[in-house]
Length: 193
Image 1 (cartoon, helix red, strand yellow):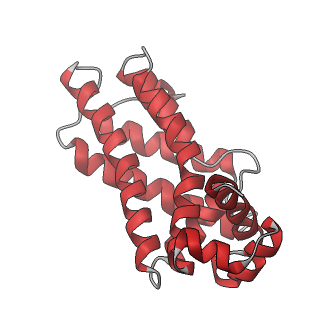
Image 2 (cartoon, rainbow, N blue to C red):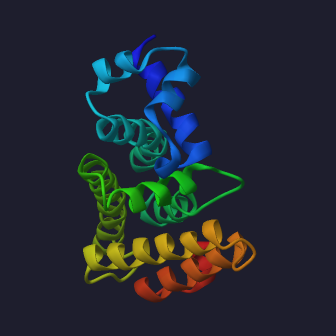
């Protein structure tokens, strides 16, 4: 079985069981391989989990890269990024991210991957905000600080939506994010709809 196939199966098992309840034997059984083969490819459980999380996150990052390379201006890219980063539908992606953040406190390899991925998202938003400020589309004297504040808000609200069902709707989450982004950039909230 190819390494990529093992990562795909690992993602499926981890998404269903969580990092804390997944054993390498569970992944090996689901993939129809031996644990020895898993350790041959990944050396340790921690490295397997980190690489599986990175593999799962790459799909989101592919969408982010396409957004950044698109022809739209900073306002269009900002709208698209806020929608892309906010939770949508019944995606299991955010549950995996939240679980990875938690597990990262005990797994250095996972923390390294998680930190690098988080910074890619924050840097992408900061670049959009910087371009918008440079073009005079909106006001943003501190694009990096604004990116940290907005990403942290989305992360925190998404935890509420994902973990505490029925506490906050996705529609309300996006409304709160739009208001915060508009305030941050001296815009009207409806400009980000």
